[in-house]
Length: 370
Image (cartoon, rainbow, N blue to C red; front, top):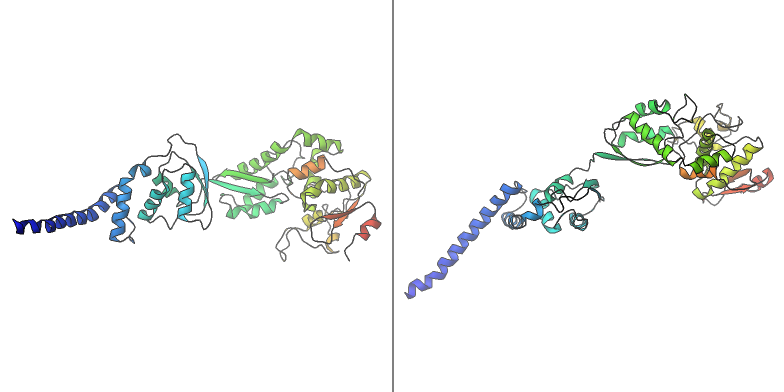
């Protein structure tokens, strides 16, 4: 009896060891049946450890956080860690448990391939679905931005990297002869000036006609009665107002100067003075290959002699069309200009982007940089 009793602990240890070995071998098999094969880089102990966590927390992975939850935008910044991403997902109520979400990512080998980008995610998705969604930053919709003061060629230039299936050539063709022009601009002119600056969320399969239409509708939606009435009070047609706003947009580096710059041009118009605007000459010159820009700077004396109806140093009145696509602030500046006696302005010498204004040519000359 004494001999059998002394053997019992060894038998028990043997049974426990066999059971543990069986668990180590069997638990990963169960986990693989539910979640697919594990990452080949995991060692035996890691497979067992992760498989236990996966099986014990199955509900946190396979049951949505909220079956009726609304879709939301989730942003992953470049360089964000999986720990931070999973923590943010839990804080946004998109997943139930950040730690088990990370375990699944490691089990599947997805932790090293999460991509930065903007995602449309929903609490109605399971954590597993979200984990796989984060492997593809290519959204169903594209965010496209147009900066104030861009000309149509600059919009065209960013299309190849935008994610939209629109070529620069087809865009320029449609923009220069839109099928649905707004009803207040002359027939036969391009959409220049009316492709409203802003950020647009567009389906990836947006057609060229649809794209141009969206930008035109952006303009129409921002053309308030206040702006229309204000432009009319300046004695301008709406089309002339947009032309002037496009010039103000290019002249003003600092937005808060736009109403003052608008007043200068309106004062010139009132006395029949030429507009004498550098951006109109830049528009006439077109692309400067040496500088890699559509806006040649500085302009030479030879540039100021370019023969073009857009050269307001040579030709009085307005250029034939807008020279850029102005934003709301430039349109507002033309509709509600500052009340000044200025006829001249030039860049300050301090590099601030602001201008020195003058009532007379003599004062303008005095404002020249040393």
